[in-house]
Image (tube, rainbow, N blue to C red; front, side, top):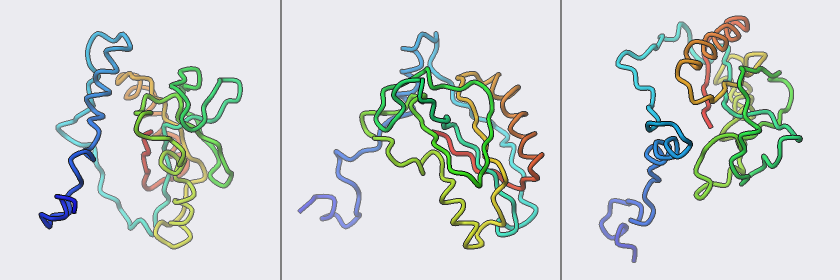
Length: 181
């Protein structure tokens, strides 16, 4: 019998430990040629605004770091090697009523321990549609938005975030779901 079941706690086995992905990303950043490890954004004061109405009455936007599939940019499918050519550098938007093929080969994720086969993990538009149909959210905003992953806090804060906010405001969004890849 598994020793973890014997103790009655139900813990995972020792070999099933979480992947230390944050340290791996810091180390990877250095190997890419940046002089120092990646510094995670960690604010003392979190810019949170209390919702003014329940989610069941709110218009919700989806913001993702996934990239639109570009056939001319090489392999971008599940399990593809890191593909910087598929990266995007400006905010983009898409119609939430349409189907989209978004991928994450441009992201530096742990390819040894994941397959990237489930697009719902980086673009859960189908789940958001189901939530709207069940009345859990009021409605889906008419557009979803893509947030670039440029490895620059300054560009993200000074360029991308204001653009994302402007687009959400133009769509009269009450809340946004941020889905990093």
